[in-house]
Image (spheres, rainbow, N blue to C red):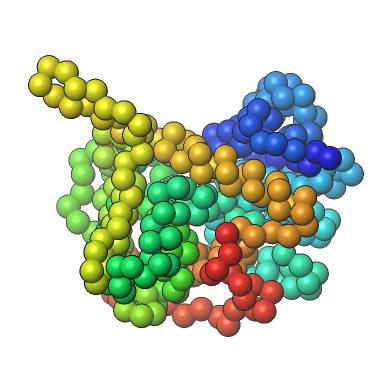
Length: 340
Ligand code: NAI
Ligand code: ISE
């Protein structure tokens, strides 16, 4: 039987997920869409044969909607996720789960009351082949203990709506999730260094930034976040261990040599770079909902990402090393670090 999905938010990634579910995902279809931008939502509804619904709340309540995908702006996520839980519907929510950790806690409280996980957060890097291979290598312990990670998150450019805090809350939050998943360790402290600004950033934006995280066992992670790098979308992750190093390669499939030069394609944006990861993420989410047992990034993972982002923001604003203190993990989420 097909899983009938309602999607709230028909912007960039909302459209992508709607088309992915419609044209690529097996065993699911989009039956309803909603957005405050009515025209865009109506257009995509017509394209995929779904119903346009005026409000997200109304969409969640529809009896024909089995599960919900939330792809609206960050501050609206918490409300829609809480509404989905209230209606006992599975919900896939794009990152961040909530803007602040308190919002993630409110979501966990509702799941705990229900005694069941209904929420998955869109941390798709866990489904990227490169990160998966790094994880297999680290899990095998062939390279000894992990000592340091050097990472970079580069976007070609951003518009005026992208702010200094978003470098962590909207972008580095992906590293915060995937590196914790790779290492199976939580973070204990954060620092942020503000290097020389690029002249390409709009005047309110500090770009680039360098985030430094420390984990429970003392691993140091540096993450360069540079969202006006011009040349493409570039994600780097190099894990230095005691007897070797494992890193992401650039996922280009061919290169061209001509006129004494070697040209290799660099991804243009996140859609292109992580396309296969999004496809797998959504297919596995659909399968797990149908099996009535989620196994992807959950509300606890969303909470840890929020607490860590907040610590990074404080570190950036104060210039100090900020300690990261997590609440005790509720029993419902005890398996968080091993699943997915
Ligand atoms: P966008 O601005 O292109 O689209 C957001 C849409 O939400 C807009 O169409 C807007 O009208 C709609 N919207 C805003 N408030 C709403 C409300 N109350 N109810 C219904 N619709 C509402 O933004 P984009 O890039 O598509 O991002 C959407 C979300 O997805 C963000 O939370 C972002 O952090 C996340 N995202 C995740 C990515 C990933 O790699 N996992 C990549 C890009 C975005
Ligand atoms: C965007 O919102 C995403 O989630 C992308 O995956 C990320 O790489 C980009 O920096 C964000 O702005």
